Image 1: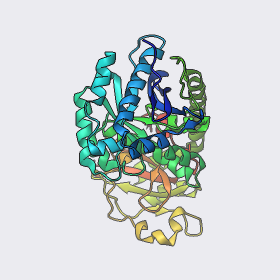
Image 2 (image 1 turned 180 degrees about the vertical axis):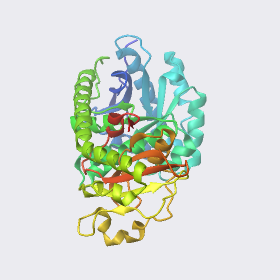
Image 3 (image 1 turned 45 degrees about the horizontal axis):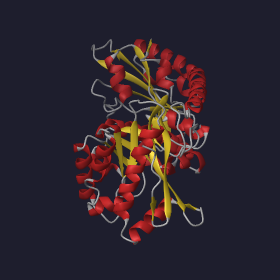
Amino acid sequence: MPEPKPELFGVRLRSALQPILSLSHRRVIGYEGLLRGTDTSTDAFVPPGQLFHKAESIGALTSLERTSQRLHVESFHHRLPEPAPMWLFLNVSPRLISEESYRDLLPEVLEARGMAGHQIVVELLEDGDDGSRGLAEAVTYFRELGCLVALDDFGTGHSNFQRLWELEPDLVKLDRSLIVRATESPGRNKLRRILPNLVALIHEAGSLVVMEGIESEDQALIAMDADVDFVQGFHFAYPETGPVSRRAGVEPLRQVTERFTNQALASVGQEQAAIQPYVRSFLRAAIHLQGSGDLEDSCRDLLGLDRVQRCYLLNERGEQVGPHLTRSADEPSAQSDPRHRPLVDTVGGTWLRRPYFRDALMEPRRLKVSRPYLSSTGSHVCVTLSVAEQSRRDGSHYVFCCDLLWWDRPEAGRHLAAGFGAGSDR
């Protein structure tokens, strides 16, 4: 049966399939069906937003949705070069979700083509006029059909973490505005540091992550560094209304992977070289401290290095023992900002929650180097060197720590802990 080319209210409709690629598998794992319309009288392109707005205004939204789903399913069936376990991503109109007019549309389409629900990823976007109840019911409905569910345009509008906890989607598609801001906005360096944590949080919630709208190699590298699972965008492949290839987008992905690998390995070397003087001085201080028990005397040379922020001791409970030591008052420090003075005094503080404390205590006498993180003593990013030792006086363990002001580069520190491994023997 030939691929259909239906017409509705003077618009000829076609399906464009855009590949979605897995960064780990380095191949296409699915296609998103995107509607393309052409005015039958002028041959002018009709934007999808205009098409759905017109359908809604004349009460034909359900008809357009049914036609669209059937068109994408037929196109997916006809144009794939050979049978393969791939997903077809289908958008469902948020207006139909709010009106509960989506039921029975997809089962009819799948049954006509003999497709199973598990081949479909349904993309859902909340309508601002509706609460979460209708969306939750839609998630349940499509899951009962066997489909996977994707939360679309996450990070903008009504798609937020509350929806993530409530709906527990199988996939989350990050809104394109995030990748655009990570490359073009004044705060792009900060957003590049945030994105990996955002992705990690979504992973912890049990969802795979798609970064859509990638249009440049720089954006592809940012997505790869953020550890997203899947990518989609013009940099890899445009939506195609003609025959599709399973190799579409694979070569650009190979090139990005190669560049990312080279940059990551180079970054590990640069970061290790940058931090080695601090590591050597820190280990000398740790040895001196083990013998003398005098923190101030042991840290004198270490505190002379330009990026050292403070040195301190923690007991077995993660509680700070005595005041911390800082560089001399006439030397610049990130902690000199008067706005953060309420945070500077850490006497009596507890750092049990910090990975650098727990990791050190679990492996005594092994150097630990934390990943960069926001310091609790000011709005600066730091890295902590730590090592656990046993007191010669009473046999208890303590953790010797040193905070370093980290380099303000978007790529700095991303591979630091991996570069040093689990730790280094003192």
